[in-house]
Each structure stands twice: as structure tokens, then as C-alpha cells.
Image (cartoon, rainbow, N blue to C red; front, side):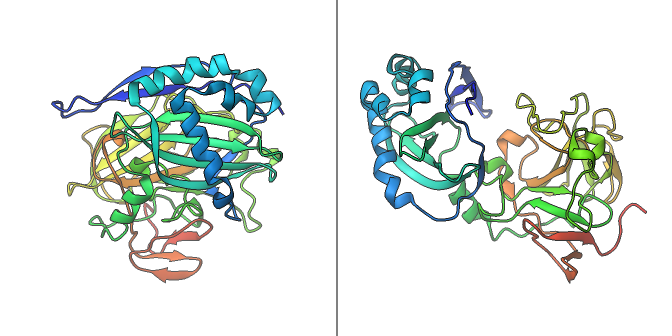
Length: 367
């Protein structure tokens, strides 16, 4: 299946004398891919990195050395057609001129693809001219030809996995409850890549996605073609803890299920300042349903709005994460340990549920 991919390469520059980050964006439009391939951020099962490590590092060396004709020889037919050597040079030469050679692989992981014949890897690479890492995604087809290549400069100076390990023992200060009524399922959450699709983003480390499912595990009716088909859509979203509303966004349209809005990732959003250096982020609200205003005091269990499908969301769900800064791009995600909740029927204090758990507040909120 051939797909047209628009690639945005962002070059981030830091002014060390400024306290705020600034980013300069250079958009490169490329007809980049090939048989794409839905790649998830979950672990891919059998670890074959040892078989592909040399291939991946060779790709980096050829990009750094400008050997694009040699690299093209390793492309599959669709990649050769979409990104010939000359086009690859147009994309990569300005990048390496700015950030230097793609010298050292600081971290890697194997990704899961919808097609089991494909092997996909995510590399966090340390260039020679900047402290900021570059995320490089490389995909190989069943013939071991390169079927996908994506370079994404980041603001990170260390791989997110290192940051997550350093923060894993953090003790939550705020008395937190789950931000909903009744029994929900953890769609994404936990400390490992197998459990959490947010693990490659330090701003959303330990984040949760929650959705509703019936006893058979079904999340929608009528094929899920409309948001209204989903059990989650329109459900109340509650304040997880006491605090003051710091930020509200309420004008982003809800997506058609299966589509995403990558231009405003959180969609409709509420940020709560808990007054102790912790901030709750709740995202993807239904457009026009947020009931609180900036500066308003809220208590745990107060209704904030209704669950929607806005922003970088493919189906209705609640995104929740705790962070140490009020602006998403400035903070580190923190472990959110909830108060007394039930996890698969077992009552637990300071719980840290993970993907697949069915969870609910022992003491119902907002009723």
C-alpha cells in the first residue's frame, strides 16, 4: 500500500541566555514513503536489534558522509522512486550542516508494525554539533531493503528512557483521583514501552489514556464511524485533584474517528496548578464543553467538561498526565500515583495502573 508522507524536520536552536526555549522550524516536504506501515510505540516482540544494529549505524554513517547514492542502493523500489539520492541530499545535507554528523546512538528500541514482515527501529542519536538528540526511525522490509526513513531533531539532551528511570521513584504530592466516574480501561499507561505509548516524549512520561469499554471489551457500536458511536464520547471529565485552573483551550474541532489533528496535539485542554509544583494536564475534550475558566479554583471531582476526540487523537478518550511545569513543552512527566482506587477489582492506595487494567475510584467523585 503506497502512502504519501509529509515530513516536517524541525531544527531547534537554543539561546543559552534566554530562560524560554525557542524553536526555528524548517519544513521539508518530501514524498517519503513507501509501504507505510502503521508503526506503534509498543515493543515489537522478538528482539532482532543485534541483527540490524550494523545496518542502522551504516545508514547514519552514509547520511553523515553524504553517500546518498550508496544509501539509495539499499532502498526498496518504492523508496527509490519516492526519494532518489538527489532528493535525499536536498533533505539531509542542510540538516547535517546544522547539527553535524549523526555520530553516536544513545539509545534504541524496536517498534511494532502492523505488517509482521517489516522491522522498524527508533534510534536516539547524538550529533557532533549540538547537545540535542535526533530521533531516527528506520524500517526494513521482508527483503531487508530500507522501506522507511525519518529524521526528527528534538530538544532532548538525553533519551526519554533515561529520564523516566530517574523519575520512576518520584512520590506524588497531590491527592489524586481518576478523572472520571465508573469503571474505565487504561488504554495506555505504565513505566515501560510495552505499556505506554507516551514513553518517547519526556513531557508526557508516565501519561495515561483512558477509555470506556463494555463487558466484552467493545469500545464502540455501529462500526465506530462517528464519535457518538463510542462509549467514551461525551462522558464527564473530572478534576483529579484540588487546584487552580492555569490554562484552557476549548475551540478545537473534534476529529472524525481514525483521523488526527497533528497541528494542535492536546486538542481542547485543561491544565490545573495543584500549588505544589505539580500540574495536571487533561486533553482531547469535546469542543465547546469545557466548563471552567483560567484562575478558577476547582476541587477534586468537579466537572471540567466532556470527553471528546480533539487534537492528536484517533478516537474518543481522556488523556491525563502529571508534570512539573505549567507549559507542556517545558515540563517533565511525573508518575501520577492515584489515591484509593480499584485496579481489576483490587483496592490499592497510591496506585500506578498500567495498560489493560480496569480501574475505578473506590469513593465515587462528583456525585
